View 1 (cartoon, rainbow, N blue to C red):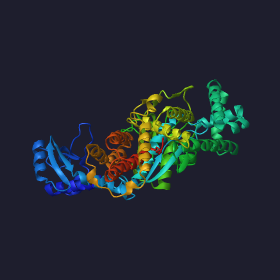
View 2 (view 1 turned 120 degrees about the horizontal axis):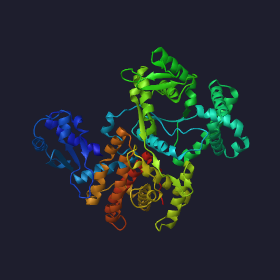
View 3 (view 1 turned 90 degrees about the horizontal axis):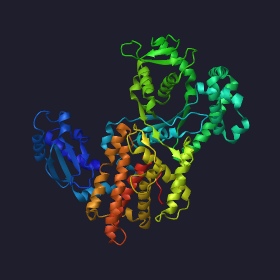
View 4 (view 1 turned 30 degrees about the vertical axis):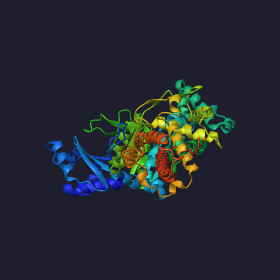
Length: 579
């Protein structure tokens, strides 16, 4: 494990500089594997020690580097120490590198690899509440909600794998004036029969029709306002119709989530907090935070000088609450109910100002725990279309990904005979969607590209799945051999060392991901691992090799397979064993 070597190097540094070895753990990083292979496994940037005050910030960096390097002695763990410009490089014993890194894979600890690292000691622990997906009820699942769903799922998986108690919450858009429109519209254009046959499609049609009608019809607008007021006042007819819409939607959505491999612990929604929202208004009033605008709306002044240059509206002039009022109530309620240590909201970047205002208002109300709230925002997907034209619904995207993948598999000469090719095509198609989405920074918009996304070669989800299936096939042909004791000295080839050096970085990659909640670090790590495995398949045959060599190589491939599968699961991808 990387932490064994990091600790050994940190001990040397601690003795040389008369400091606690713990201060050097985060400063030691595994050297990325490059084509022009470097010999070093770990490096220490002298600038890091200067910045933290361990070394004087004045003076010649190179002199400090060389002086420190000469104080550090080689031993049976670290066999070479060298200094370059402001960097000290450490090369560890090759036999020990293979032994320590691959040990867990013979002890049934495959799932724990990289997860017990000391690097994680500084991360927030305890309970993490992640709010994601959050579509609007009474509408088919729009493709636009895909990003929030898969990004939130990744964050929840990552936090859980690092030992946090995670609450996965789907906060449905199930309240607000749009339900006034839908309720009034259903009374005029709705059909109970059509609602039974194709519920969300029918509600979507009603919503489009009533919106169009309301554009030029003041009576329809008033009917919508009246219906929403009836909802807020809990009138039985309005509540019964709304509840029917909500139940239908959640049932339909669960099917989509099942296909994506996503689950939720809690299905919440704005409707749960409508009464509490009125309490929030009273609390804001009693704290002197609520002002009345010229238009008669209730606002909170968030400008630094209280000069009304930055206000947030929390109450309509007719006394009904707004989305942010219900969000304030929801946050307070969740803290009371779940005692979370951190809460993460996952929505598109257009809502950045909304969450900035939300956190400011919570702090102004005296809720210091709002410092533990965080908004993870993301950009837009451009050009997401199916063969039939512009895409609206996620189900169409998933169906097309499966169909295209099934077609590609049927044409491929390497495709194995599968028990359920449709299921495999579904899993591989979804992994292709996820990897295309996760490769870049989340805040960037990206162009959706079917052909590029589904390529078997290159940096795609299909390549990850193909590599995993190939490793599973290799393990299957030599079943049980990977559990046998192996001789690490038989893994001295450069191709072996490259994989081992890359595995040293796994805990660092997870640590980086946990800090900025960006999946790209893990995606790039896994894609690089797959490229290294592809080279190893060519250079390190298992079949036809002497038994001891085959055992050692199989342990290496088995370890790489486990790390690949674990990383894929954190990303929200179900690994396939055969394709």
